[in-house]
Image (cartoon, rainbow, N blue to C red; front, side, top):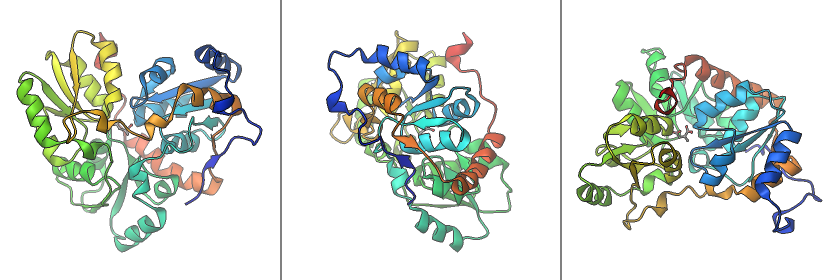
Length: 338
Ligand code: CIZ
């Protein structure tokens, strides 16, 4: 795989060398001004990172922000493929990520060489690829989708061509059921959405009979079968804020609940449980690699920095631009409409 990350210089400040008395938030603010930086944070980030970001959102929202920003530096607090998307869309900006090791189990499951072979075996298919993949896999795809726009995009694709969907088989199976399209699925899964236990979810619902269940389509079908609402992080947020119900069980990475609690402090949000009955199992270990210290260092050191060879960037840009063209316009979220 092509390495798209430039490491900090050998003499760059390290975490161990940060003055423990430093006011990190003030320093991040200073660097934000000095570097003309915009900080983008995914809903799966720690609350303290979400709170100091300029924008918090899902991959689609944040891709649009990255494409439109006039900042000189994009600081992407999420996982590596999200930083790559920002660089593909905004090649003249400096794009940094707090931790180069913040990967993604879906991306890991889909190595470019194996994906190339998979495509070659299905030459008459349209390759629809979830944004959770490497730049190289994007470059081999016809169109990229996120969980916010996948259904709408698939409905616009030529009906006479079967679809290859990679890398999340649960999301692909959900989309095949919703759209009635024939799909060949790559066998990848997200390690966090795989953790939820149907048995424990049913027990939790029994204890909270009025609670509505909102689940992400990366969850296995037995979890989705119990959901009152299935959607992307952004759609789940809009659902719980627009609903008159008071209690919700949330089956996705639980840091999304931070935005819910801020916007609807009177409602109760319960994280869906794993097999041991607790909710900790669904914390994404990759998202958790980002900390305020690493965020500060990435801005100070201008690294880890995303750099993508131009030929690869141009190839990966085409299916991303197709995604942006085919995406429904951003809806006004329930929380902003009031
Ligand atoms: O699209 C994203 O950002 C992811 C990874 C999940 C979601 O539904 O927002």
